[in-house]
Image (cartoon, rainbow, N blue to C red; front, side, top):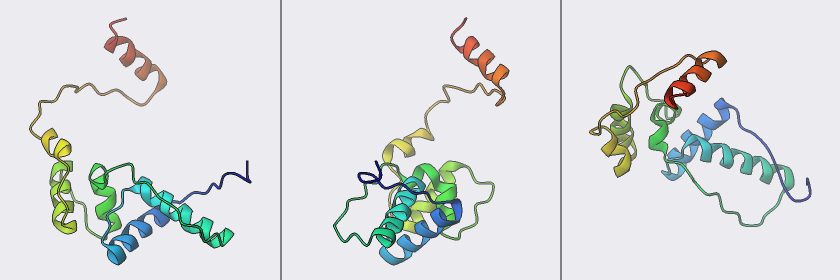
Length: 132
């Protein structure tokens, strides 16, 4: 498998650094998942000296992770809700908040049940949701 695949990881510090550096150098706004992929790709290049072209596919919107992305860019994230943070990120980046995410703010809340992160509480919440 090692002949076919390369694996690596990026901790939170490295992920934030990649988001910040790529944005400042290329004005490309990465989500945390893509930043991890890019960081691992950089590790791969350094370790293997492979000079072939590669494609890194961004599969998530940075607007789904506004707090993390804004923090990576050095902006304070206060007690603002996610919609306010999305607008702040849009202003900072010059990008538009994706329409499906923008629409969420005006939609009714469909699910409001919260359960504790404990096995018994989660099991009971699932039973109740399924009416078992």
